[in-house]
Image (cartoon, rainbow, N blue to C red; front, side):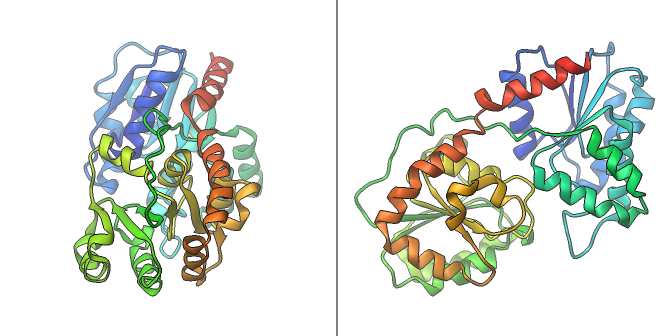
Length: 338
């Protein structure tokens, strides 16, 4: 059984992808988001009230009180794997949420095994635990029962290359919210607007209406797409992108960048967070330091040879997260817990 209290966005895509690609018979127990604080506070009780017979193994996503769910469902004897997409101690580094972070910590303690979506996330969480007065011996206990299981990607539809002979296409494919820092992207892209390239920006969020007019005024019909796109259209857009850019302040894995890379887009992302791990050593030159985004954009937009040399490396780096590659790791861990 896979319990997902935040059955939306990337969490839902992950849950449904594992259900499809695992060799195990996985049943989903889910609830819709009701705001992230309320989800933490209410989802364990809501979901526990809907359980049936105990499963062989329980895989629980992290946005709920796992010990509360186990007690109320009477699943306390079921082997339990906790999957952390994120944690609330380091999600907002300027303002750690110690209340919900403590819920994450209780859940980690209650689980038999813990899986993080990246090595960066595991180390980041472990380093933050002293904020909760967790002793070093307990931190090491977390490490001893933890593994890294990347998020799986659905690669269908990303194989076809739809790039054309026109100027290169720069893609920004994130939520227009503060943790993804769209302001920095807009500032950087406007700084190099005199160069010959086209632009695609996808996603929704509070910043879209505020920032899009400046892009529209400067780029006009050089903007191929702006705003939300249905799944099929979005995946087709990925296959047209030459470059994909991130300005994120918070990233524990990087699904949107990984998907774009799998479609052949060359990444230009911060040299921090989960990105060095996501790209790997072969793409280290595609990491930029703080304040150097415009310089990186100018270099890759004008250097077709560099883009062509990085493209197969980016595609390979992204495709290593396809479900065919990562699902066996989930299955092997589940097998070891039965």
